[in-house]
Amino acid sequence: MAAEAKLHHTVPQFYLAGFAADSAQITTVRLPGEKRYTSRVRNTAATNRFYSIDGHPDGADAFEKALSLLEGNAASVLRVIEEGTWPLSEEDRLTLAAYMAVQYLRGPDHRRTLEYLAAQMTRLEVQFTGRDNVKQWVEKRYGVEVDDDETETLWQQATQPSGPPITLAPIAHIEQIINGADELLPYIVSRPWKLVRFDRRSLITCDQPVGLVPDADNKPWQGVGFATAWGITFPVTRKLGLVMSDVTPMIEFRYPVERVRAGQLDSAESGTTAMEKFINESTIRSASEYLYLHPDDESFLPSKLPEPTLSNLVSPGAGELDIPDGEVI
Image (cartoon, rainbow, N blue to C red; front, side, top):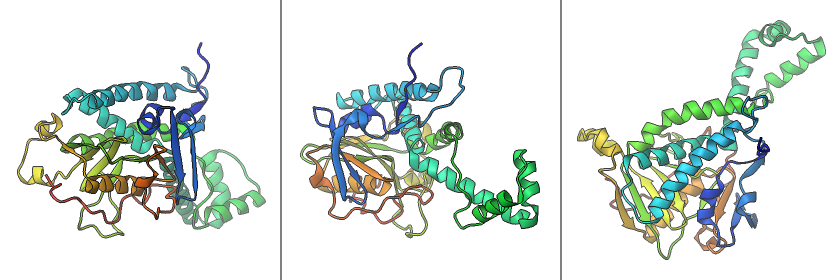
């Protein structure tokens, strides 16, 4: 039996390699930018046992192995794009869309969001139960008995604004990845895809590279989701970017969604400075904590970078982005 894979990448190595130097070195920038270092791809965006499922019959790294299969298929699609094939076949398009949906949900930011939501639900439940009934609530909910001191500690923790400290088991996160990716997939694959090829300009990536672009009429407090976004950006490599644009025109003109999913509205264009800034700004807004880039590409970072966004409860990209002229399809 093969040894368990303990170092789990939350951004795949094959993908990061598209932004690395020939020596497999990549630069990491921790938001808001004071800490920067260059290291090997294999040591980047990796956490010990992040997806481990203890006791799984196929080994604790069963989900990591499943991710490897998805990543292998996605890597093949990226190679096809790099070799000049565009538009993609419907099968390859669906493979890449599935990879992007999983990537959006698989990172530490999403797990922290789930933990925050669980803490808030527990806080509301405990407050509704009332201080005098917490001991009985714990016994009924968790099947354990607690003494008066433990009950008071639980009450104090559970009723603070952030709720009680909750650490989500990897299996709970994994279940959400599987279910959530299936729900997100239609919002990715049903948009027109534009491939942007860069020569002199370069793209960067991050720990959350699927960027949501808000509609121009969005207010900063409204946030943005897959269903409401004007578009979705995804840096494929440092020289290739994807912009999945607005579905409103297709809805208004009743364009068959099957034809959109087949890639009949997909297009390609040469990258401009405006498009480089558009995609890179979307990537930066989407980032949770880290940016990743080729060691020679720091000039494509803006002088001012945002603070980390450690959860995606407030959807990234919920500010203003200048959509390049002519980009509405």
